[in-house]
Image (cartoon, rainbow, N blue to C red; front, side, top):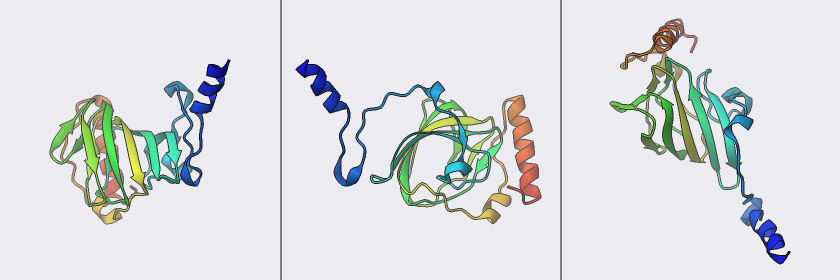
Length: 170
């Protein structure tokens, strides 16, 4: 009985300044995808979906999955945080690299990107600090795609994103 009480106590505790140190186990299927606009966490052009797995505002840490649709371009940007990104599905093209599942990116508060997702992509990402992206619309509108899509959905997505940028709708 004492071991059972001890186990309960060890699964939840509060750290300094009220941060939650609750032990969590989550099923991916139970967490809905939501538009970034809902929380305003990333402040990227429309189209990104997120699954927030853990958010500790006191520590400034956000663990999430992000989904980028085929053809999406994440503009060159900065933010007041670092991030570690692990590609889990699809393609992420950045800094001359064509990244696939298992590949990794680390970024800091210096300008980075643009990132291209010609065939769509899902990533697991950890932010430490303010994840809000600061970017110039003119940079995105003037972006010329470098990477070619390899799937039918990607080819349609790239064409649609280029068309939206050409009329200033991104």
